[in-house]
Image (cartoon, rainbow, N blue to C red; front, side, top):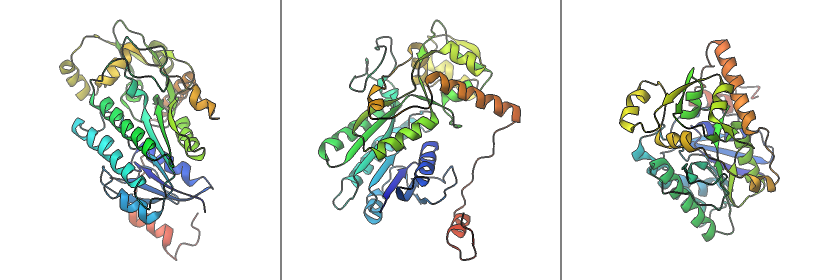
Length: 346
């Protein structure tokens, strides 16, 4: 029997692309995807289960399906995706329910992989040039998204200590580019003008979306344990990133208040959540030697990720508009999977 894998966040970019990777893996016997809304990519052989955002049915599901691997992609790292009041419920309560199900009596889970973010390190003028996995952030967090990620990781750490029989890995991913992912940073870079904090030109690190999915696969197959930074080699000045992406700088006073930013964000002039404001002042770098020591090799450097993003941007502009998003229809999916009228299920 092959692996039986459960992927959370099937209705998100990361969950959908991770499911597609698992579907293409011959060592995976069963793929289950959980999400509150419809999947964002077409599913070839994965089963989709609708759930609330705290995954309250997860305990029952893990017991019934006998999954041995859980990939948790549904930690929210973009504060513009959900209201602040929901961040704790999704990131902390959702992770708590997931871990309770993985460690329950009768569970066959042997591997848990959690996708987190380098936002847990923050971004301040006191930061080291590179954060390694054992380092702590330089200053207490002031943003809800960072706080909820830190709390969720603390739950995972405690779970790993209490369940040494289960391989538990946390992947802290840097700023992601490529694959069509939408974040405040990628949406800013997709416009003709991009915000620059006046007086600052920080060094930033990026990872291409393909490498993030590959890192999740790597963590599963090698049953990694511990925390791992995921980012391409090298750092680039923000001004150089804008030049490669074909953006003109839009200077923003570094002392501008959140109140003054609100109308600019609401009208989509640009997006500057608090955690991005700090990043565009001070930058952030992480050491990736630990993940490489396990045999993982990146396809893209930081500069390569930016160049890949710029190529996609040019192609999208030349074609006029991006492709229409996939629309999941349960009845149609079930027909093609199970109806005796279907002769060729490929």
